Length: 154
Image 1: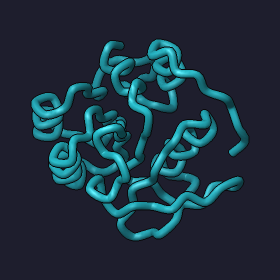
Image 2: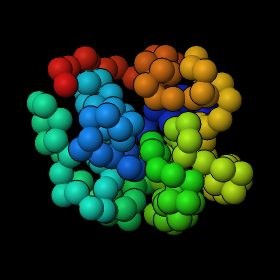
Image 3: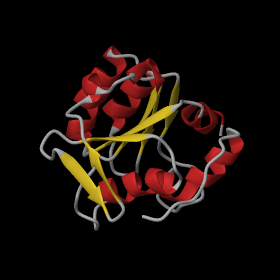
Image 4: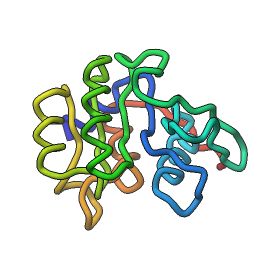
């Protein structure tokens, strides 16, 4: 839980793999940050915006394009082959913490993440059957980190 507290201690968040497809986890996780009134930036190199029912978010193409990467925790919703180069770039711009959603990592990704980030949430644990997931474990993490949040409509 210490890594989760560190993750949520960042003032900003980003979702790599954010999607306009409401059936995909990249959409659902972006929506979770929005619904909890947290400052979030979607990363998607192919879509200029991600549209939720109540708000459109401008995207950035990569961690390098984030306004303040050293103050941004990164949720990752990409396949392992995309995740490793994404984490390499995230590390190079000073992102402090990453949350690797189930299915986004392999052994090489985990090894790199644990060597290069102050906090890594990934793998076994959490309340869900597939491991740590923002959608399942996020609210408990916010509370553990003492983050004040307000629920808002999607």
